[in-house]
Image (tube, rainbow, N blue to C red; front, top):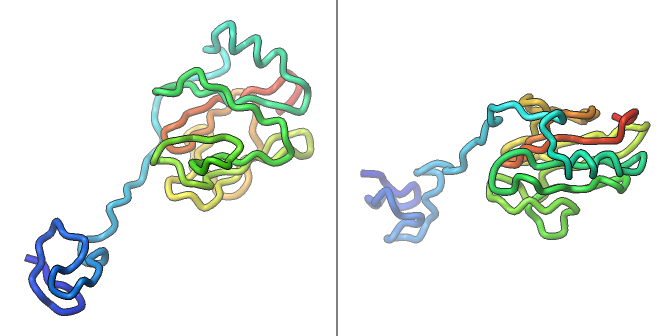
Length: 162
């Protein structure tokens, strides 16, 4: 049996607050948030269907697509055509990724110097490029896999860019 840290009253493990004094039991029970590791399984630009390949070929120079490779949102496309594109679970993000594994303001894509750069915005689960957790900004190259929460996306840019 656990004891309340405030009043030392015996508590059940299933409660969030002490029934005797009302104190929060978060410190007693610990954080229940879990870390989502990179999902194994390789997918690349060579696996694009005809529609996806045509969409990439039609991109103007300076823009790029993130193509969702696997899962419930497979086939979704997210356009990067602004100097700064935000990605996250917040409805006002440019790339809205509606899943609990995605932080509200998860990552930022920045266009500069002829490349698209990705940076994690201090998200809980991190941002991965090619199955490696990134720390700081990373320049993306054609065919790179970007993982944000459960979303695994292939970075696609016109030939000669990125």
